[in-house]
Image (cartoon, rainbow, N blue to C red; front, side, top):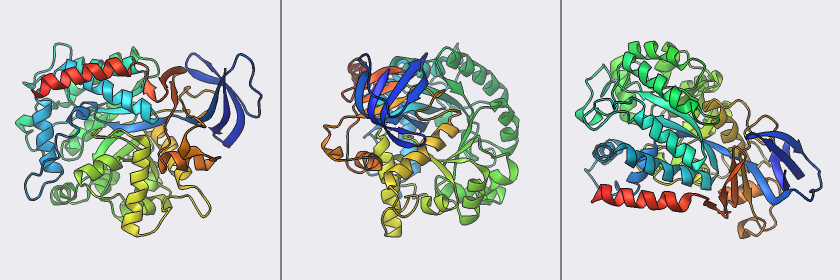
Length: 448
């Protein structure tokens, strides 16, 4: 049994919390309990978070795209750098880079990741002998680090709206509906070998998927999650209006069965009507503030969306910096800067901003990744994050001020359990040394 001085339970903070774990899941939670002699004792516990949007291999690009490009340097010029980087990646590279990203996620408080997986083929664009080769490398990274995995194989067929032929630089992504069905079957096979993994689908975006293809592939999701990039850049919105006569998010609601299984990733450039439709549908807005800031995408209207009752989750996307607290902090600070006021995303007067952000992302991230039970409760995965009382940023902190001290004050995570196994101790992943060394060796060779 694990005993915590205080823990954030579904009903709020509780003192003296004993948690029993069997086969990876929480089977018992007792509050107001005294520690027993055999209990492992810790100070502060919160549930682990879902990282709902990751491109694991892009962790290897961190710092490589920070040189000024053309006068209109933007997402589109960053994408050219990304294409040149991925051209050289082997399956070994992808596994090593993704494993480092997953180590850093666990150390920052993420215990499950939604891997938006679109690097399917070899550098020539041909399928590997095993179509699921790259998916198997992502699964290996998840297995070796212990993170929970929701694998989201991406359907990508076109360079732009109107079914434009894919660019040569996109050849490692491209599928047609038939080959995607086979790839998806391989991804399900790969995921079945992992504990607590599941699979959804990810039509990349309306610029990479035609309306006809979208209708054809959606049934392949079965009951799993559906993720799509939507309205990330203003150019995307303008081109969608020119081709389909509607904005991307509005078009999806008019022509696709968007519901609570869907995650609209970024959704940065939405208007009030689209905000209302998203909120009403139960879909999750997948927000990645660090990447969105790094790419200069814009600021999601989170305050208006929260007022409409919309659901959010957070992701690390390009993994330029993996930091769960940092994603929360930038989400709130961007709202403060744009609206020129404080505590914008707090759930009401007298409410903690950190707690409001955490609760929203805990529930929204789980929904987006197809997790039915979340939090420190019986039946949920035993995904637990702890802080020590010796952290100066938590001096005197009680209740919600603990989350504020983490998100806004820089408190450091002490330990992490994922599926009932301790994977992080004293802030460092147990296998992190070997995984970091493999990453360094691989990346030096790749960039020479």
